[in-house]
Length: 259
Ligand SMILES: [Zn+2]
Image 1 (cartoon, rainbow, N blue to C red):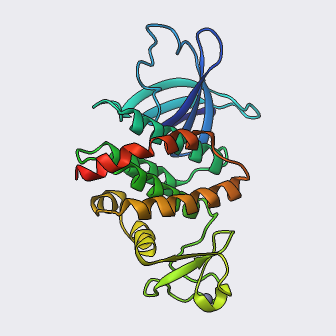
Image 2 (tube, helix red, strand yellow):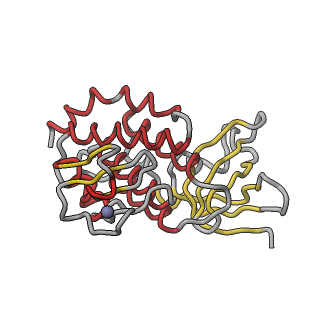
C-alpha cells in the first residue's frame, strides 16, 4: 500500500517549481522522508502554516517504490512552535537542530527515541520560562550523538565498562568514547568539574528538568566547543547553520541574567 499515515516534524522546505515545495519531514513511522507538496507556494495554499519548520503534523503521503520523492496528500498541524511567535534566536536554534537531524540520520529509518527527543526539546524551548537556548542545543547534541549511535553512553567507560558517574571526570577520545583515567592513557579531552556535572545531568534528566537547572554559561560554551569539534569530526565537515548560531552568543548573557 503506497499511502502512508504518520505523525511528523517538518524539518525544511525547498522551492521546487512555481507552485510546489519539496518538504523534508522526520516522520515517526519512516524516519526522514522527502515529499512534494503540490501547490504549497500558492498564495492561498491548502497547507497554510503546516509546513513551517518544526511544526508537528499529521502527515498522509504516497510513497511509490523506487521513487525518492513521495507526494504529500494531507498535512494537518498537531502542534506548532509558531503559535506564540518566535525570536530570531529561536529560529536560528530550530534551523541548526534541523540541520543536525538532516545530517545525522539516514533516510527512511524510524527512530522513536529521536522523534521523542525532538518533541521534548521543542516543548522545552517553547515553554513559558526564558529558554536557555544554548543549553538546550547542547542537550540535543549530546542526545543526538548518543541515540544516532555515534557516541556511546559517556557514563560508562568504553574500555573497562566501569561506572563513571561517581568519578571526578572522564577522558573523551577523538572518536567520542568516554574513558576512565586508566583506560584513556590520559589522551583526549578531559571533562571534569562543572562540565562533567553538566553532561551527567543532560544524560540523566528529561529536557524540561535539565533546562530548569541553572547552568554556568562558561561551562555551556566549553561543552559547546567540544561537541562542535566532535560533530565536525563525525560529519567530516562544518555545519552551515552553526556559524549563524554562533553569532547569537552575545545575546545569551542577557537571557541568563533574566532568570
Ligand atoms: Zn576504563
